[in-house]
Image (cartoon, rainbow, N blue to C red; front, side, top):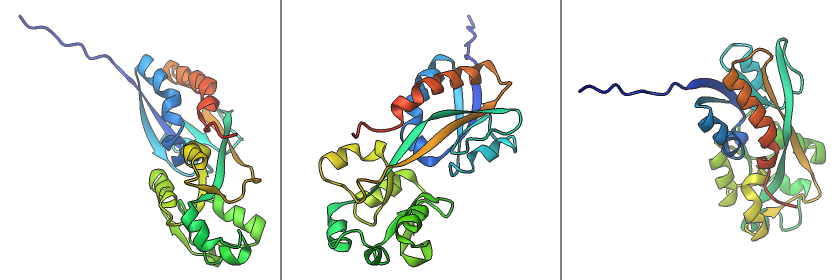
Length: 219
């Protein structure tokens, strides 16, 4: 006797996100909703300053962006603030910053940046030390996990989300180079005013749970 196999239908959503969110808090935040409501997610990675632009092309249904202004027909709702710290491992600090984090030392110490769209590091050094990217050596590592690992192993120093460094800071494996500096990037969920039920369910779930997963428990 032939038995027909039933394959449950899934709803596919295309989401633009920055790499750090995808590597840290995003999947734990939406996994229950994806599973419960049978939603398939296709992620598109870009800088948080540009992810919302992918909605204009129709490539994605929603985006996580640092842009607070919504396009026509869309809504931009705050998800929370993602915190970053400028860190390096102790060996790197002893080699390059033995006299402190000075302007002179920064012109010689290799930094780690994600890509040329990433303005966090360059804006920080320009604002506090008057240094443009042309003034210091820097590795370009366009992978959130490899970026963090490069800093962990002492290849350079850079800005890493709290979510990825909590335990290493507690155990002394990493040193916060500017502990009084508070770097927070407010992220917004951009979505269409008129959207499918599955995307509306995902929106409500994300708005409720994103902030509780966005950062580590560093105080």
